[in-house]
Length: 80
Image (cartoon, rainbow, N blue to C red; front, side, top):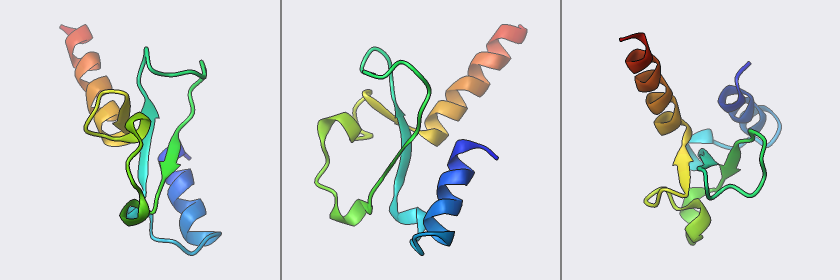
């Protein structure tokens, strides 16, 4: 099971929360302070006053979907 599905499963089955109310993502180098892969689950979104470190409008934090899209593009470029 991948990290995002594991997080969504935990929110729904253990905490009885809606995963759509949360942000799933990663700090993006060089803005990461922990040097191993780990995903953040933040929320509920409607109660968050966005901290700069987790605001998806900046390049410090990237949502899972964006990271996956970037990795797919990189894979396609490497095949050329």
